[in-house]
Length: 150
Image 1 (cartoon, rainbow, N blue to C red):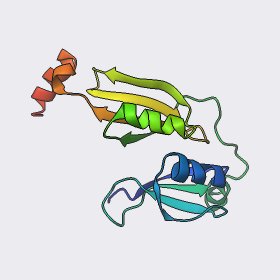
Image 2: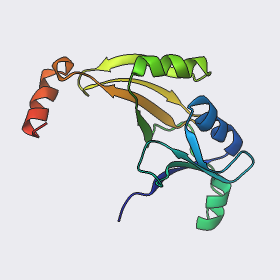
Image 3: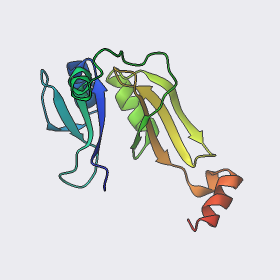
Image 4: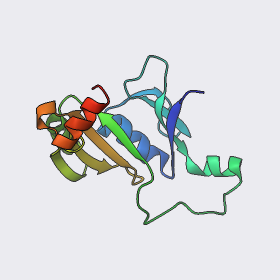
């Protein structure tokens, strides 16, 4: 078994399509505005989908839960994590395209990364991150990395 892709089930397909293709600048590998399904290149091997969006109502029909509503006012159960070369530069570029961030770039020394967070139009949490130099990591994280041979 292998992971094929992460499929976001969305209510407003066109808004999400434009967010991922235009604001985030992900290359569309399948689909177009007005459609039901689209996939985006997120840097995986050629031919692998990675991230896709699909109309939630169509999936609900297939699995038989059209009478249920989408969750609201819940803590996140999933986050989309995107590695970038430079969090600060990406933060500036995405902000210029209208992406509203929850928090700006910050060193997460206990995680070994610099990160910032924002949401897509359907309220999915997205993190951009880049690795911090190991000497900037918390001592506990450095010890743990050593324990795992990294």
